Length: 69
Image (tube, rainbow, N blue to C red; front, side, top):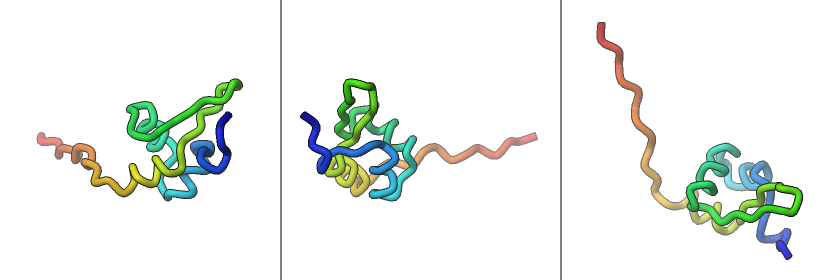
């Protein structure tokens, strides 16, 4: 059984930790955030795992290159 106090939908967790929903989903798919799925296929994310993930230092994405020409 999934504990509703420990897991929430991507939208709920995004609001709680202040990160975009899609960023959290991508992190969960990479295995950086614990996730679970309901029998109906709803993705649930761990509240504790998402908070710990957010506090870690993450590498920023590549900076856009200026076009020459």
